[in-house]
Image 1: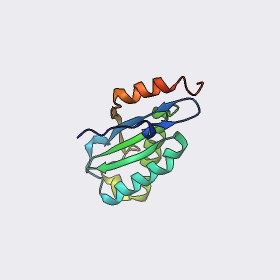
Image 2: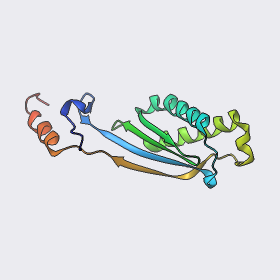
Image 3: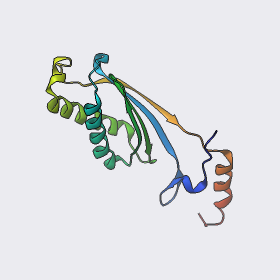
Length: 141
């Protein structure tokens, strides 16, 4: 069953409409299995705190022992690479400080692997695009 995206489901700002969803996967350095529920909850809190400065909205969060899966929504002006650097460095520092036992498995400064997986996700039916184009003449835009 495909979810139908209606024009009112689209985000907008002064001059544009958009729907930008990303699936992000971050992996713990050396694939160490250190993420439990409380660490995942704290990582999520840090994400939600930092996302505000980058026009990002967390939609879904899941974790395994050595990685996290994030579904997030962004704006056209979101600088994803800057957000990722800010998030990875803040979360790495705070998690290692607040959960000192992790330092036994990750003794260097990094919590996260340098690499990550970022995928665009979601579909907009052609009808939504056609409707947008049709409506452009009506608003003088």
